[in-house]
Length: 206
Image (cartoon, rainbow, N blue to C red):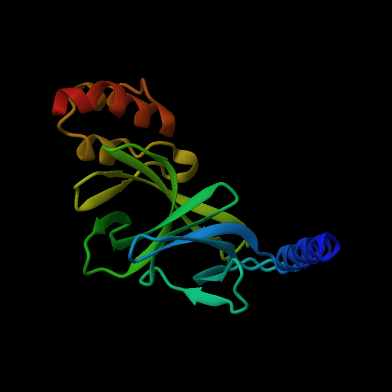
């Protein structure tokens, strides 16, 4: 009896290792999704191509543990997903472009996209909106700050030009000490602005 049990356990472990190796070979990583009901389902996730030409999928691929069928999920169908220590969230976002100026509005009526969560606090979230550069085929991103409860995000930097100071000062208008630090160029990095807001502004604003 014990021999049969031992064989069964070995078979399960072997089958599991085969499934894991096959999933990794196909570019899947161990991760999870959080469905619209808030339930976390663990499994295997793939959100981008694994070939020489990089593509970010609009619908991620997911295979739940102990399931044989792979499914695809759009940002409208799940709340978020994660893999490789990274977390992506479904956000209703609209990018407005006018005269080389960009605005990012948040409202439930807008189409949802997946944004990568870099840092999160109850009052401020730092996102990366990832995209593939059409010329270089390299992965790039737009850095965005979102104040909880706001109907707008703000782009933090403009490539090699550094912080978008005017927009940041407008976005954080109700924290004069932060506006002053940005204007005087006392803050030059994204993390510096993020931490300054949490350490110096949140308490004063509330």
